[in-house]
Image (cartoon, rainbow, N blue to C red; front, side, top):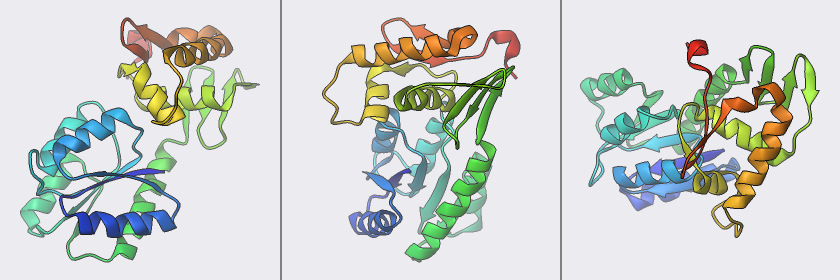
Length: 224
C-alpha cells in the first residue's frame, strides 16, 4: 500500500514513515498542500495522512481539490483539536481525525481500520457480465475467467479506480512500472492494446484520450 505523509514537520514525517515501514507500506512525503496535489497526480496513492496547517496550501484546501477527481482514504493529523475543525473536516469527507501529540501505534491501527472498510467497498467491479475481482486479481466475462498478464490487470485496476479521469501515459508508467522505469510510452500502448483484446466486447470501456493517454468510462446511459 502506498501512503502519502503530508506534514510540514520533518520529524513527524520520519516517525510515521518508520512505523509504516514496519508494516511494509511504501511512503511518499509532502511538506505542503501543493506537493500533495503534485504527488497524487504522479503516483498511485492508496492512503493520505494529512496535516491541516501547512504552507503554500493548507491541508483541507488540498483535500477539497483532490475530491474533485479522486477518492483517496484520508486521515487528518493535526494539532488543532477544536470541535469546529473536526466537524469541518468530516463534512468534507475525511475518514478520520487524530490530534497531536499522537501515538504512532494508534495511527497505524486507524489506517488499517480505514483501509479495511474501504477495501470491503471496492473488492470488485461489476458491469453487466464483466466482473473484475480486485482481491483475487481475476477478470470474468459471462462467468468465464479471462487470462491477462499481471501488468494488464494492474492497468485495468488503476483505470477503474480513477474512473472518468483522463490518465496520461506518464502517470501509468509511474504508477504501474515505477518512477525509475526506463521504458517509453509505447510500453503503455502495447499493454493497453493487449488488454483491450482480452476484454473483447468491453474493449470500448477504455477510451483513448488524444495527445494524453487513456480513460475508463461507462457509456453515458449506463452511468449512475
